[in-house]
Image: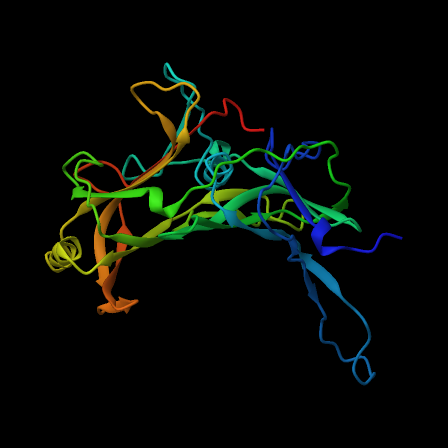
Length: 337
């Protein structure tokens, strides 16, 4: 009998060929942490049968599962989160060795993204004692956060269908990944009518937190199963918190908040050099362009005797730019493992 050991826990993921397919295996090891959670609902009905405390009558009316994938954000594994949280993005290339994947979260006022656009996941999790499996996984929400001097952290909640027992897909190798580092970030802030990434704000950014509710939900219908029938996308929600030095940039942004000025904020993370560079990119890169307005600014705080200030930027569709948010990941993976 195998006895579970903490150090032997593992999560393996793969992109499904068809949503909820029963044969798609995991294809790579997740470089992070996570444990599958079974969300089946067991109901004990109330009845008058002449027995104190009743009897052990139960039924399961709904099943499903989820997992919170956490770890350091990497250029190689972020596309899994964006594909399963926004929609499948096919990579493009240039003259160099890069693979460029782009997600335009909303490019029109209605933005009809269908469930067929979503790249669902199969997830295996467990330890040396027992592995479990969840299919039709989609990202319900995710967060990216970072503080100067540290790596960027990722947390993503993946919802899926009923969890079952399995054995781990054998023979998968640990993928090589490169971490996003907060100190390598650059922030650009411009009016929404200007091109994103025009004006860099230097010597000011201390940290950030991006929170994304993707809008995807499992839709229950009566069609012969206890877990959800399909995923559908409703309204998403994106907010960005930026922590600044209390100086010219943050003072100007507080003025923009008071004036209700629509802006576009670009966060760019440049990583290790590509094997072959060109005029488009010379490093592994994450770019996030976010359109919206400041919602709040906190009172001035301090950090090691230094005055700082944090603002919350609420992302929304810009009629001036016909955009809401764009995410770009550049790595050297023509296909995700």
